[in-house]
Structures are given as structure tokens and as C-alpha cells.
Length: 238
Image 1: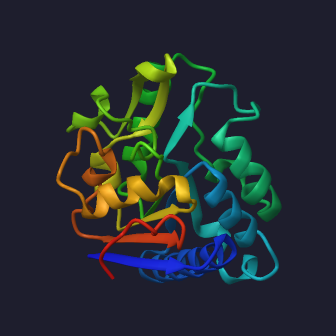
Image 2 (image 1 turned 120 degrees about the vertical axis):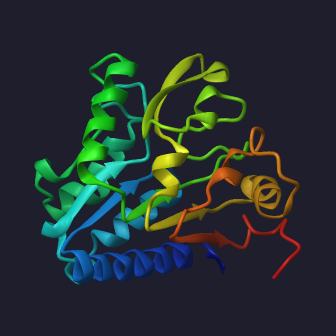
């Protein structure tokens, strides 16, 4: 089931996302005794992580029951400025004092294909994720599933090293089989520069090789799209 929520600005968007994150986590822990989430990179998720680590939200979740994964990662050291792991660690994991054993970062010290194989093993040991957080690029990529790249058509593997020609590098990423197996998927999108991509993905014709985010269709879970008004400004529907 797809649900769309539009907020006035980034602050309201972050607050709505934090509330939804907490609700999903509480329900998962109550039902299954645990909660596993794949974190996203980017400015909008950063705002969410800072909120979750704040006094307003940090005591609402039993964080000892939470296991953290990452939807994708750049082919950079874990302490690099543009590492998704570093951003999440500084804004969420360290402030909450999360046990390192509960955090599954991509081992970027390995060769990309080896790092992806290692992640595949850990994902399968965990089972389907309870929540996958995703962003959306202005080219409609999500995680590191870029337009016209090989990983878009992966049917079996849960994690791959995806060669992205325009970046001249590999990106480590979950695949659509991993994303769509999740109990819940939440897109967080802000900014006018994303408006065309948002409209194309949600209301445009089906072009999943050009608009990869169109491939996000949870098998049995919920799909949440959270926007600020700028990102949603190209939408025609309610």
C-alpha cells in the first residue's frame, strides 16, 4: 500500500519521519522482539537521524533491540567525509551509544565485489528488513541503483557492487529484491531540484530503467513517500 505525506518544510518533514520511524520500530519490537532498519545517506535522512538521537525521541525506542544496515555506500573509507556510515554514526549511532555489533556497515576496505558478498551474507542471516529508508536523486535513482545500470535487473542477490559509468566508480547497494522484501519502505525527499523526479516516478509513464525508483514495490509491506512541498510541487494528484 502506497501512502503519501507532504509537509511544509524540512523541519516538519523530519518530525513526521521520526514519528513514523518510532511507530514502526515499536510495532516491530512488540511483534517480533527486534527491529532491523537500512539507513539512507543524504541531507534529509541526516535531519531525521539528528531528531531520533535527540531528547524528544531517543527514549521512545528500545535501541538494544535494533539492528542497523545501510541501503548503500560510496566506495570510500568508513571515515571519509562522504561516507554514509560516518554521517549516520555521527548523527545517530554514536549519540545513542549503539553497540557496534548491532551496526552492519559495508566493509569498504575490501574490494567492491568482496564487500557486496560479505553484505549479502549478513543480510541473509538477518532475514527480511523491517524498514528500508530511501532517498531520491534528481535522476530518480534510489540507494545506488542508478538509471541504466546493471544492478537494476538483479533478481537474486540482495547486495551488489554496481558500476556507475557517470561516477566512474562502483557503488555498494541493496538490490530491489532486498528492498521490496522489507516490511516497510520509507522515501524521504526534499527540495525543488527533486520535483521533476518525484513527478516522473509517481505520475509519469512506466520507465523503470530510466526512473529506477519506480521499481520500489514492496511485496507485502507499506510504501511511504514523505515530501516537503518543494519536492512535491510537480505532482498533479492529491
